[in-house]
Amino acid sequence: MPEMLEIEEYRLAANPVIGRSISAVHAPDEWYAKGATTTDALRAELPGLRITGTRRIGKLMLVDTDGPVLGLRYGMTGRILVDDTAPIAALEYSSDRNDPAWDRFGLDFADGGSLVIRDPRRLGGVELDPDESKLGPDAAAVTLKPFRAILTASSAPLKARLMDQAKLAGIGNLLADDMLHRAGLAPARPANSLSDQEQAKLHRAMRRTIEVLGARGGSHTGDLQAERKRSGVCPRCPMVELRRNDVGGRTTYWCADCQI
DNA sequence: CCGGATGTTCACCT
DNA sequence: GAGGTGAACATCCG
Image 1 (tube, rainbow, N blue to C red):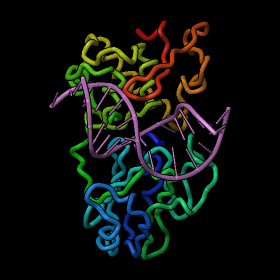
Image 2 (cartoon, rainbow, N blue to C red; image 1 turned 135 degrees about the horizontal axis):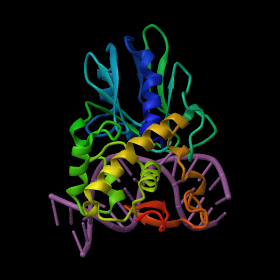
Image 3 (cartoon, helix red, strand yellow; image 1 turned 90 degrees about the vertical axis):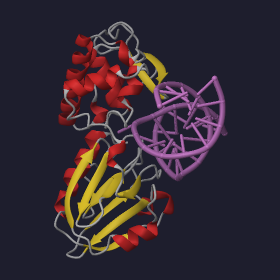
């Protein structure tokens, strides 16, 4: 999916609907209504509401209204279409086709226009008043002190801790590998084994990775991306083949020479 | 044909 | 409680 960088693009693309009133709801897929939310509830509660703003916590996009908050998740293959236009034309690991049969949720607005989630694999979802307290601080905003505390509180593998959305929101598999490479830290290190200096270095690397990859155009533009394959080579140590392991249940590429 | 792929949630196990 | 594992979702790609 989309990681937090893409969700932020989606959010910005959705801002033009602020101020509009919902005239119709398309919720054809019960699977797509998450938590206690049902498609019936979406159809019953949303029409007539006016959009008052958008927010984002990690990978969760929040649409504020003069009624309930609408939470939108995109899974790995979800894209947003605002007024029939997608801000990101193609998505890694998703389909290049653009089949309206994959529209899982949509809003029509009284003065025209629409907001649609098109998601081939149905990994995303929609929820009314999602529990925002279940997410940790957003990775793009978290300051050093709470970041230290997040690392210190767990002996889980460093990468698993960074990707635990309840502790730190927004870091996905690609961002995690890239920031760890940038910081020179091995992904399987226990999170609480980092020195103060390493914690600070990782915090800087995280902020920098988010900034740089955001400017380049997304989470798939990392330094490691081209080498995410068997026989991939470290961008910093050109003679060293990257290791490929599972860490925290996800495929992990890292350099055993420069990531200690 | 088979195995994986930017994610989340949940059940189940240690 | 903390962590880990595997399943589920469905499609495309090598």
